[in-house]
Length: 280
Ligand SMILES: [Zn+2]
Ligand SMILES: [Zn+2]
Image (cartoon, rainbow, N blue to C red; front, side, top):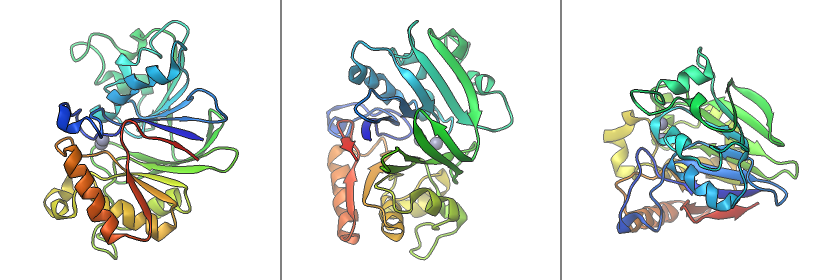
């Protein structure tokens, strides 16, 4: 399995030289297997535009899996040129929440909010909902579980290829909504444990520094320390800090990484940046 981090920022894009190293595009991670082109894309933040350079001249042929529908996870969709062309095939899946998938997307993407609705995209697009459980998507095994966030149903994913390489993706996660847990930074609730146990890579919300969490705990995100603590608790091989606060500069992200590493020296922790590619 190869992971391409195309967008790693949370909430809203960040521009400027002080954010360039980590990258300013919002959430998008593309997965490929067996040396093929990426066929499964997690979230469609502005980072999805960068998938075009990985695909080269080829159209996208695969599935976009949305963990939830907040702007920072959907706003790249109509700017995904490799999917918005006549020879593209795009299956878009979003969390079941009692309404038709296309109608849900169109609430944010249609006039007068945006020039076109989802059915205005070129190519063979289909829109459907997905619910909790085990699914087979683009030759990956995908476990879907609902996780606490804020404002709309949010899913975390555990994804494995046929060789057994496994990642967990919890981009927007507020475990404190299930209690503060043994470490005082969020509960190790059942869905989080099931999604992450023994994974090779944990891609996790790292929006806050530890000292920011008390005042912002109601905003729907976690402290970077929780990602490390959960990863250690469940035996993850490597934690990738993700969904960085849009105000956090490269220097500050680096400082945060060193702080977390110092508190969790017994687990591999790194920062997901837009240039990060991982082979598992
Ligand atoms: Zn987000
Ligand atoms: Zn969100």
